[in-house]
View 1 (tube, one colour):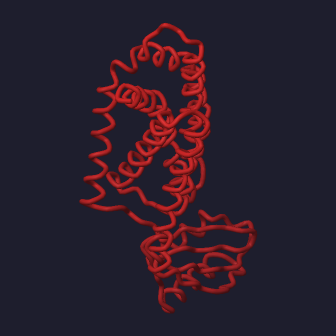
View 2 (cartoon, one colour; view 1 turned 60 degrees about the vertical axis):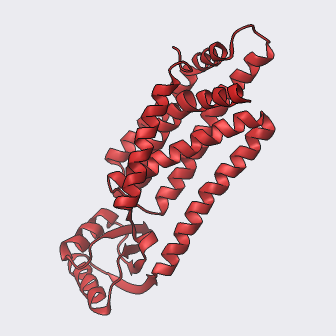
View 3 (spheres, helix red, strand yellow; view 1 turned 120 degrees about the vertical axis):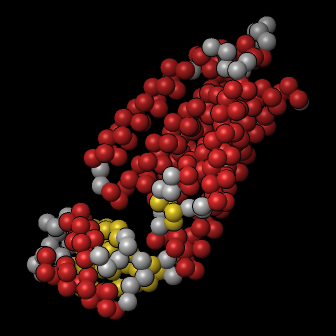
Length: 280
């Protein structure tokens, strides 16, 4: 397959997705979760046999708060929700005590908007630092053209994932940032495998033109790329449909990111490397 010769089609496809995402970011923004907007964490002690799903359903039935994320640790349950006053806290406590036995209210902790904005800054900074370190590593390990192409592909993946979350207004929480960093690690690994084969073929001093050599390198690593992404997607799909609701954001982010990570490694990174070498 002529990946390099058809690079303009890949550029058009990626540009459409990225532009749509950017327009959505400015037009409707993001559906930020409690981690970013601020809220409250209510802590209760209950029977360990009670599931987080049961607690969530009970809190939602009370219709006191708009959203509630439940985390369970042994016999302790943490209810993350929007800001609540004393009256709302009492209603939630009484509702849980009426539904379950031996419910003990322990504390409530507020997470203000200031902490939410700080988390946003740290999230953006962590992604930028990861991209910068990848550029330094690949430039040192290979050459600067490989580094720039690889980081361009990573930036492409991040923009598409973030843009899709804005377009469809899927909720963004702290797990989303963890997933983005995981995607960066997956995508760069796939890209390095292809670039390593490109470097090996270049060292063999074949008479092939650069587009032919790049196409050949991509095809030589295609089985590995496809098998890797499929073995990652199968358990992620299972987790998305059968896992708990608290990890859905994390799993959905990785599903999208892994697909576009494999796509960018094949259809974006190598063509961008070709463009750089042509202009070099």
